[in-house]
Image (cartoon, rainbow, N blue to C red):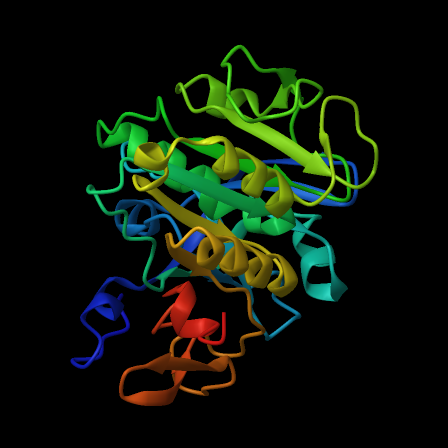
Length: 299
């Protein structure tokens, strides 16, 4: 069934479904990648959208999780999450064959501009899933990723096996060699950043690495760049500062606490600025993706 609202056309594609767990893998730092069978959610999911998941029948409040991958052919949907609290702890115990009630996909996703063929995609922590999804979505749409770059940051071990990148990237320190193999396989150059001295990673903030890459681009190439980011609020603000410094278009996927996740409670509302002034917008259905200048007009 669908949750519909004539004032929000995209909400006509929010589905409630009992999704069967296909597999779940655990990684260091209490991180987990969950794969479920949810054909309707997979059909309409876009990079930046999320699902609201009932983690356990004894826990009434759902948890919002960003979608990392959606396969329209198989109907499978992947989520990456880090355990925080009792709800996600319960979810981490889900096993193949279990059933989870899922509400999704929810929200407006990233909107890439074809006039900016160079994509700089930045993901931090559990903000990595929308960035991985966006990279694969662009690839599946036939867009060239040859001149684009994905930067991922984490302060716990990355939830995948790091590999030395085979794709050379100018403007990146020689010591910053490691990448995400799933991105490499689709021709997307990626690099990793952390403050934890992980081998092959940039030793610093992922946004500082982004600035170094942008600084190295010639002016004509810099004009072609568009930035996309998802992660904790300090990282998003730092990304917006980088975008403002280089006068680049930038879209941010916000992370926010949510109760209903379908616009009813307005508990996730944030101030969004435009030429008409400030208005409170709901991250769940008005976002979660917004233009950076609308969230940080002071930059």
